[in-house]
Length: 519
Image 1: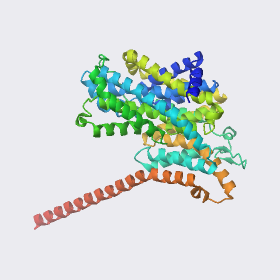
Image 2 (image 1 turned 90 degrees about the vertical axis):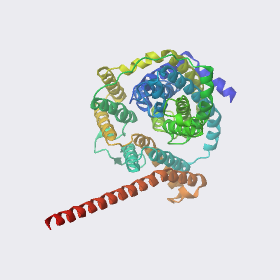
Image 3 (image 1 turned 180 degrees about the vertical axis):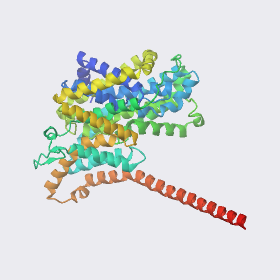
Image 4 (image 1 turned 135 degrees about the vertical axis):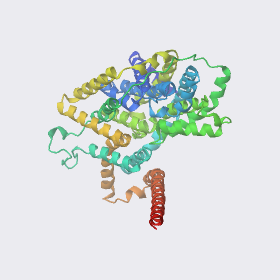
């Protein structure tokens, strides 16, 4: 392992890859600071730059964008109480109160140090666990792959929001888009409406830029008013006592966040909330959480960065994205001609270990850059919409048009932008749609192969041990959402019944009063 890591550093420290590490983490940090533009939009915007690059350099840059966005998202959470990314929502619970108490500098320094620690813990875990998981996954066949993809899809759907039906609808739409084009086995056209431009299917980049970046532009146009940074940034220095206070929760949350990120569908957001609630329960001063407790900043920041790295374990070793962001990364890798999976470590060892080594370098670069540049990054929050919106639109148009030089693709981009906007307005999660798009074709292929091997016997998906276990986990992952939905419906009916009964009693009393007045 150490020899392979040394080989990875030999790949990562080349001038070209060092430059792309720097570009990735800087771009991710700046985009992560901007409220609304999260890592998914950031990576979608960077895919046109990665297109045509060396695959190793491309994945190093895109990974830097991912954990850079998670790293930088804490700035707006602390300064404005406006989380730059979903994974930093929990950071605002104590970070914003610290800023209002005049401790914004300390809060930002704690966030930077905790993010670095959590990211490092995640990279160590990735280095130690990924090879073993890949060796185990070599035994996977079409049946196991289909079950694994179902697990990844249902886990994200169940964690996509409170409304399970909307998550399922979003995922189904993504699968339908994935099936557009000519069927490779039967040569039958599906969902093409006799348009030749759709015979080869819908490009992933068009959907990603439309649903995330262009939809975000429409949301910003629809949103009235603009925010600005409140006040300046105070001293960043932390005392030895303060460092000793945040060290245990930072280490605990880093480990917890990594294993949460490894689970398909969990991701940085779940990891940050889980670590925050855990530290609040076990801390002696748990009652002060939410009022500016430094532990409440350290725990979620360590967890979300560790989870961001942990999500690369299923992506690189199984070819299954663990979150919406890694789904976009998977699409980018497929565009670059790289198929992540069990053979990744044997077929492309330079890419895998170069990525691991670049994460060590990227985490150090983020720490060195962010501490002195925190006041500068804070000014990005004042970027006027009149400048930001045209830049995003131009990037989307140039990126899509550069794929095939087709005006039809620009029309698709606009259509998916409108779809993404409507989804946000009606609380439909976008992550299940992207995963459905990525996994739809692969699920169909694995399902067909499994059925051909079994002679059309559908029971093969529940008789094979690994497949049966994965299917069971997929079902169990949806149980909490189903239980919650049933409880909410029962509670709603009970509340409606009480209201109706109360209204009935009120009407009866009014009738009796009127009768007595007439008498």
